[in-house]
Length: 293
Ligand code: KIV
Image (cartoon, rainbow, N blue to C red; front, side, top):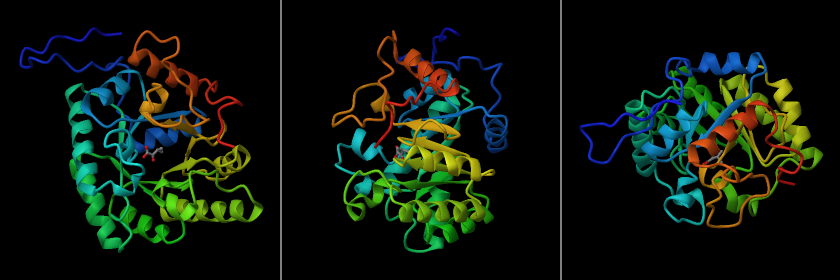
């Protein structure tokens, strides 16, 4: 591990250097797809500020998601519904700056917040452009069905899109709570149909949140061009994502059942993140106890 070098220009210390700047090439979309093709699990973690993003990169995390979960963990909101595009841009900019300063290589994804892509495809393009100009490499949006046209519109205009199905927190009120999705044959078939439509529309990553492991595993095999990233969706997805505060054990609310506290036994935050990366890559996280149902 490289030791941080003091930055004479800063009275506040330094951002950590990447763990292996010479070894790790910048993560790009083709590299993520290659990883998936050769069976290497993709690691994703949320981060909302410059320092944690740089530490996550240094720990070897492949993708950093500036999630709208920041509404809960940073802003103290009770759901993601109140997060604005302006707030998302502020945090994406902070993270992108931190990654640049530490010569980081992670792939940076910014969440399109509630209401920022629902009105029209043109509105979605304006919002996505704002996140990309703030430094995101890819945008994420929630839901299936009507979103396929929006995904196609963005992808045709050069904006990589990560889709998000299953529990979609922006629609928590319509779903009636933070519940596992796709449990019945009918809802599983609907979710599968939507996932295929999103891949066909050009989505190149798909977050599957709180869906049964068997459904996530089937979709992972079926979607050859769109790696699945699970959260509470079992171990057979192409990659995993966790909310940073959850995996550090500092969740203010109820800890979701599918989370593991990686601070347990780790001397520090970077080591906890490294343990997460190792556990996802070697398939030991999640195990059979880390699921949502
Ligand atoms: O906002 C977020 O952090 C997310 C992840 C939970 C996937 O969407």
